[in-house]
Length: 446
Image (tube, rainbow, N blue to C red):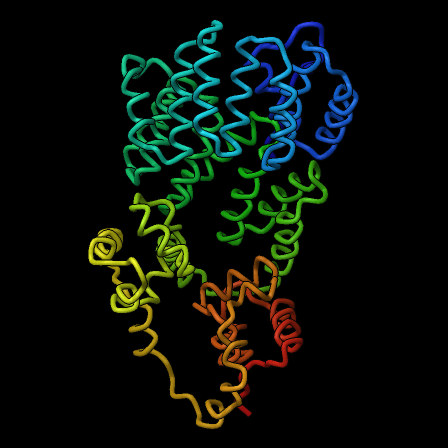
């Protein structure tokens, strides 16, 4: 296991506020472990009752660091920062908080105020670009970056933000080139490393992905997402010991991390399973393509909204619906259909493909199985399998088997489920218990 570099101590509540770079380091440190977050939360709590302008600035920044995806704490941070004396740090962190709660207009306004008080102009421009990108105003983001095109091959952060924009537009190869340029300029740019690793992972270049993820976890404070993704890659390659090491590292610093805890159980059960490695390797690239989220592609608002309402989240979901079904949906027309086809055709895929394959490969089902009381339970059987609240391993196996609804699941036998990679008796019993509570059962051949 690669060593984790110890971060230096930074006091947010010292007599003078730390620099923006130091605050960023502090944020990474705070969120690198449960203990750090608890200790930092206590310090922030001690400061909340202080209402003077100086304390309000540091407390507001501290609340922003703790908020992450908690809008209530972000709003509390905004209140504190608003009461602080005007300075570039105040307006920059106000902008960050407003951006996180989706208030783009206020975020841009505060970034501009930070610029007027001496904030670095390149930093402000890049943060504006990031803010517009978060709001999916991609043209505005592009305009901000164009205004700083003179920083090409000079600023790593410029190339990182450009890569994020290109990735949002679906220009993945260009995005990867810019992530690499950012790393040439600043090899320890953690966010560029992570996004480049993730993009390599999605495209099936597992060796490169592992290399980039390992660079992150060897130099940064505990980077949970990188550790989890490394564990997944090693588990997929049947290197369960390595996978366990990275999950153990997460649990060492985040003992109550729900995903890591579930994955730890999955890895342990995988150690006793056998599967056809060559067969699975052939499936890897196709699976990664099918699991690519629709949000990775640049679609019109109408198309995105329609697909979301139809619960179509991934490329694989598109293969389970026909052109006629899409066109029958309200507000979904030929233009939207053309957008979807443009996504699938370069990958040699087409709408309804999974349905066709299933029809060709499915076995005859005995009449007594079809004569079950499905009419009475039609509403129940049409519910998605996600409603069962299963473990990660069980959910992944059901996804690989294209089992979307409870009705699909009840038409499978125990043997069919156990034939899926990494699906063992523990997962089988979990599913049988979950559906039995609903009065359902798996198909029996007896």
